[in-house]
Image (cartoon, rainbow, N blue to C red; front, side, top):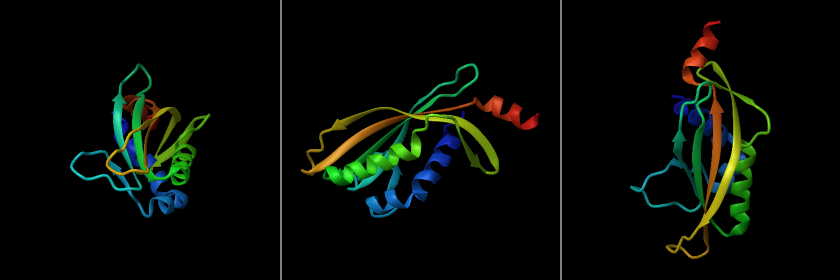
Length: 142
């Protein structure tokens, strides 16, 4: 299982991005849940795929955001994509351990948000592809 490490590292990058937190009016990035009303603007994330292959542990995270108007929506989405998508592998350090993984934008879609006219709600899917946990451990002991 690697989703907890991946999400921790990704959230650190997202919350450290001043352009994104400024657009959101603060650190309004939350785990997805239905127990809290949606804040506009904000970002929510949810792990939707977590599988283990022979070597890798691909994880897909759905990232939803809400913004009033297309100008703010474009700023938020552009920051999320720039922070997350890479054409080459990257290295994140969590608790002093380095993890090499691939992160890429997969897909997106727009949803109706009838509760508040003028609010744009979009979902972005990102795939994170680290080595499986057992290979991470083996790598550290070599």
